[in-house]
Image (cartoon, rainbow, N blue to C red; front, top):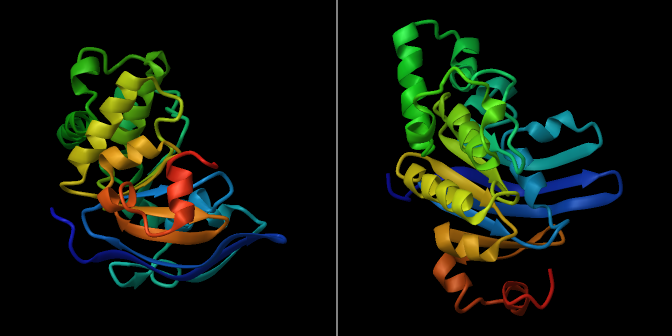
Length: 253
């Protein structure tokens, strides 16, 4: 799949936590089949933005959300239940949190909860999901072992595979390699680049080099505002805003 039409449309999105305004009237379109990377210093609203896209922010009683988000022209608040939305928009967090189950059962848990009981189908999901997460060759002979025995990088890729088992259309990555070594980071990035062929990906990262490596387009957030959005190559070579350049070269952040 190549980047094309609008997959997610965000219009005038504001998020407040009490008196703290995390996002200030953000409007952005996420294109079908792209990797949109989001960079910016801490407290710029990056994670709040991701949590709005799959309504995890609804679990925070202090958060107030205004604005409109559409997924394939469908309003995610008025047209979709949160459960159905999260099947279509999966999320990978900074710290891998495998279920206290076997590697195989981590993958099949979601499909089973969704009603899949055919053993052959479940086994296909296991193989396909682990392959897509670049983990199959490392665990194929120990699928019955506890997931907690995997290394940190392997656990993160297992979490990616677990998300893929539900076949989401969009995957949100919130600093997925912040705690990983360079080799594990490279494998996660490789998986993201390959997944772009069939998924839309939004990656929040504090690693500007990572954004430059994998992003189709990049957005720079600062204090709840989107300062700049454009092709990643342009952002890192000829940014339009001085604040973007200052962040990229490390003058602040």
